[in-house]
Image 1 (tube, rainbow, N blue to C red):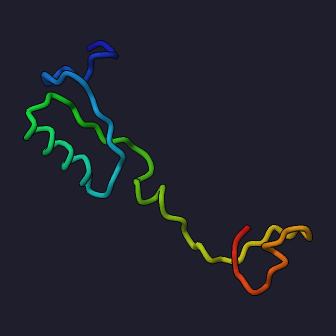
Image 2 (image 1 turned 30 degrees about the horizontal axis):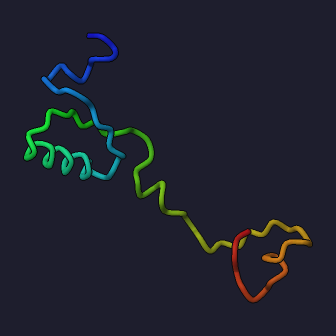
Length: 83
């Protein structure tokens, strides 16, 4: 199988890459929509971070200051913001 035509093995004409989601929910939904539209597109889930992991910051309010004396965020003691 040639490198550029691996997706056409099942009769598909092109390939669509979808971001990873838990339990492949997005991949399944895209396949369902493409099947109802009778489009020959192979849907492949990207590996790596899930969409949620990419969008959510962990421990957003931890106290982490840069320590520079010229930083206005570090000098302000009323607001707890990471800089």
